[in-house]
Image (cartoon, rainbow over all chains, first blue to last red; front, side, top):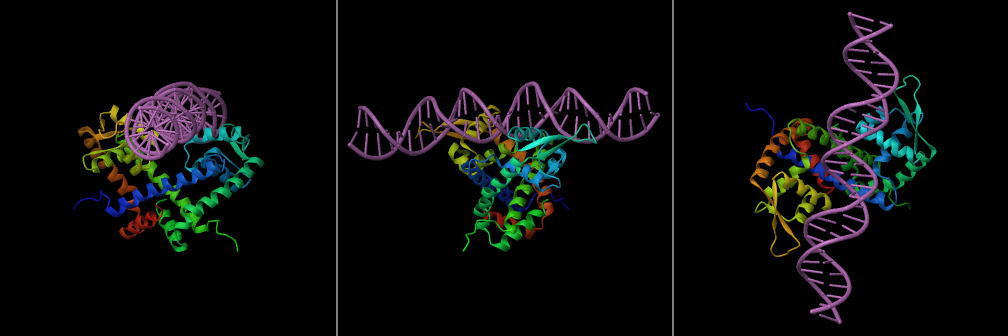
Length: 146
Length: 146
DNA sequence: CCTTCATATATGCAATTGCATCTATATTGA
DNA sequence: TCAATATAGATGCAATTGCATATATGAAGG
């Protein structure tokens, strides 16, 4: 008779756990980054998308879709990356409104350097707390939310 | 011979999934909040901790521990809540450095009003995507990260 | 007591975010 | 061709965050 709109307690616990686990892990990883003198974690995602991409370059709106960054935030993040010489904006010929964002050599190097710290952090804060099957199960459940 | 410092791919997928699922769900929920003309989600957590607490009041450092907010952020969040009349700072007699943060009637009302939107959002963005046992399993796995 | 150190909270300032809007093109359809 | 509309990206400004440090008080030791 009644519509389902109230979450069950399991649902609420999943949501609270999701928030807390993410915040806690993120804070721990960012702390490791700072201790290593690295730039913020967000830089990694952009650089990694670029490195993964075909020609080492993407349009801003493509990065946006892959990273969930807001358009205006991405625009300024690219500014900062460019100022540090990690990416370069290049003309996009087929459409004068657009541009390419290209990873520079320095950007690729930084991405690789960041991964050394990042991978250790992920193992330390996530891997070490879960068995292999648990990690797989967690990834599978989280993918249902995407 | 080699130490474990690289995460397995399952671990990395769990981490990426954790970030993405949280961001996506959080953005969706905040959007619902804005659509309902409600203040930011962060306000809820503080108000809820206060309402749950014994006398409807807590010391700032207790809120800090329960919410994972940084001390300086909490201090100013309390300012904003106070400015809206949702909480009140009161003297803490045993230690003149400290204070109580007390939920006002308006604060309790706001908390309850926020929960109406919040609970619907949680159900919509989390509950609807998971079966009951899946939600339980997810909550259990996430709790291992805490 | 008085000095030294620890704890609770606040705050100045720079960096980042969110919001709204702008500019510059492209696309569409009359 | 041209007005209307849509898309790509940038930007001014206010709000929030992070960092470092300040203020005020308490606790401990000599």
